[in-house]
Image 1 (tube, rainbow, N blue to C red):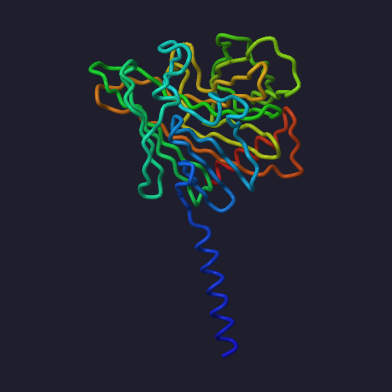
Image 2 (spheres, rainbow, N blue to C red; image 1 turned 90 degrees about the vertical axis):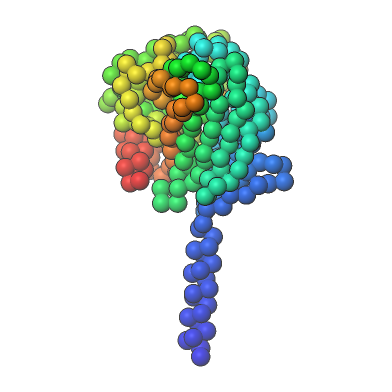
Length: 306
């Protein structure tokens, strides 16, 4: 009897731990949605552009909130190239409310139609249990009566003071609009370490070609990785690049960005683009230094193991 009770207790504990490891998607009292798997948490705000406004691992926040900038915070999505709409971003797609629903362990967010651009966005957000990654599938629907050429563009705002790096592509980085990002190249990896105390007189923005289909940003003891399909430079949107990087001159944030290939979308068809985010604690023996191949190999091991 004693052994039976012990066995039942062990089964109860096992089933409890198993139940806790399931992905949860919850609508919260403030109308945001929480996606949670173990120690990984994502919060989405449908009422403001269907944005991801929080990304946490072990309670550590990675995204910049609206207290830093009331309009430029969290992770958003735009159409590329920027020359089509200039500035500011199209409100309906960037900051107006999205409709939200939960379907098959995914949060699906749909914008209204932007009648000026002739586009409608959809974002499908989920957490992969096996990969422990945030999975996002973006869709750009052509709601006009003519063919459109467009590329997907994800913009993720994170605090300054980190180290950005990615494998260099086939062409050199190009400056866009402002001052260039002062990349350092070592072992075919492009590096940029930003200082939150640096005095800047202008914005910094460069667009680059990558390889291997990933970029990373290390900050506050965490490594954030964007993983996407690589493509050739000739398929980049005009005056754009696969990996843009932006630094605000006054406010304490950078934009870790990625773009997809520039494609023709027929009327009523959709361009689809998949993105994965990985977040991991950086081991104590890996230093955040430009040229540290241990950090590069750590990033590659995360991607390759999944």
